[in-house]
Image (tube, rainbow, N blue to C red; front, side, top):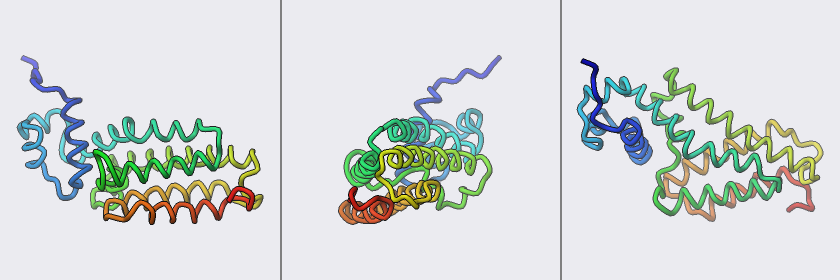
Length: 199
């Protein structure tokens, strides 16, 4: 007889996302996942594979539901530099207050873990990075077309710098940094890209 699942894998994966996100993947073992989901090890392994596969699935879910909508909104925003500022203001607000305050970002947190070098996990981390950088680049290209950027600015390098700045906000907010400090750092970076008129 085929194995019949008596649980919702999607709902379970959402639970795992929150567990890994809040507690960290390195400090969360399969026993913790079993306790949080109420499932047996055999059910988890049969559905998701081992911990590395479960982590990759959780990261992919986070990317699609948490990150990608924000990236797409940034890329579609026609304001240029103000769109980038708004992105960071909302990021800082989300990281420092509300339901997931001080959790950081599941993807950013995973960059700093031992499992971040595993192929399945590395692939999701790279996709997240590429998507965020592409959104930053799109916003910068809009800003350039509107005359908001320094004429000599390397847009590719600037997009990478802003992507790295987002990681810094995620990590420092998890460590308890104050919103005003995080935003001051963001504005210092952005000011280095813009024309005098935009500052």
